[in-house]
Picture 1 (cartoon, rainbow, N blue to C red):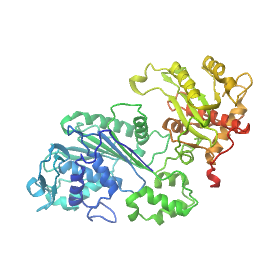
Picture 2 (tube, rainbow, N blue to C red; picture 1 turned 90 degrees about the vertical axis):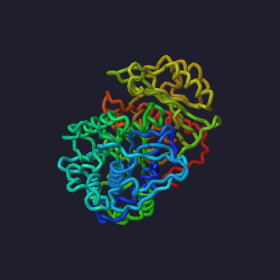
Picture 3 (cartoon, helix red, strand yellow; picture 1 turned 90 degrees about the horizontal axis):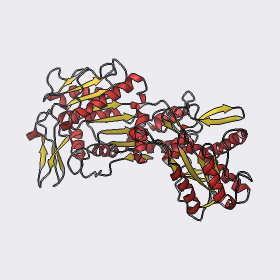
Length: 562
């Protein structure tokens, strides 16, 4: 599964990346390792990523201020970043003009570090043509003090042992800094020195941002990214590379994933992020070696041909290794915090997009809040569940926006009321369970309007009201357990709706007096779970509908017996 978020203006035919890919293959070699010094042949996936990174708009300016690539362990992400560093330092990476008929590039006429270089590139009319950055300042960030990092190691090797070394001044490429022949520099940095050199970067590599957890590393990231706004003409940008983060650690990689989700949901504006993430299918059975092999070949893509897949399978089956770590490192899948209610693997395995028609019998679940606590407003969610097969889908989730737009935000109660009433008009609703906390008057109105028509009712006097607190705690525990079992056993499906998925994975297990319940990670957390509660209520109403003989015909087969 690949998640790719690009600008609406993105056009791969309008990119400097094709020239840069050819330049890399002609001038660069593999860095330290088994294939050190061998020529580069970019696979289609990496070449496509470079083309995406260097896409330009109609005005010729870069479409992206930052790019993020997430791939499994061993995919040579740091080496790719090193090649991009070399291109940023030594060739034409910023827009200059649109190509005319017959226009071409030649190292012989442009100048090149490689003696007698015969590299040429033929442009098509209208292609973007680039120029070099004036005095580029490139920073390669490492996580540990005393280490240059994998990206800079690759750069250093190319400038001291590869073809490009022939044109470098003596001692120009050092272990702590590289001075470029035409002016500028490449600097490996750590948290202690990343903000001490003036901050005039034109390109930055943040390698392995799933490891950027400690406060000093996160400050380093923030400081350096702010510096990128200082040189407008150079159009500075940054590249993050990462393997899947551990959810809940609040690493830089996790925060970038959250930003990408917000962009995809339309919750944030003016974001110039290229986001490229690839992971194996969530329903891989680790006990099935054929599925494991197929999953590895899928997630490593074209690179699987050079990976030791048999060795990785041995590592996965080594009892000394945590299966969750294997999923994270080798399948690039999100695993979960130890107290997570449901794991990302379990939830994602139930994703099966489906359209719900007006003829389908559905149940509704509602959970919300009206109160702001310490400037944070809880979310409100309305979730539907098809009775015939347990398919969950978002109707609407209201969440406090990020940034200034959320400062005075409150749940739009009138809009919530409208969406509930519209759901009864749009669908064949046979039941609705709603937690009435802070919504008592609205739920009373819904009961008055729709209660007599419902085939499934919470109680005789209150057909919709379903308390998640108070003296019904044993029912809450049972409802949560039934929902959890349905996910684990594959007895429900969902569309992969982003807000619902986020809330499900935010939920943490807590032990109450009556048994297992769920809560946010801490009371003031911005990571909401309201949609998880609403989904549980919708599913509980569905179970009661089935027990009453409603919509018992189903073509859905639980995953555990397929």
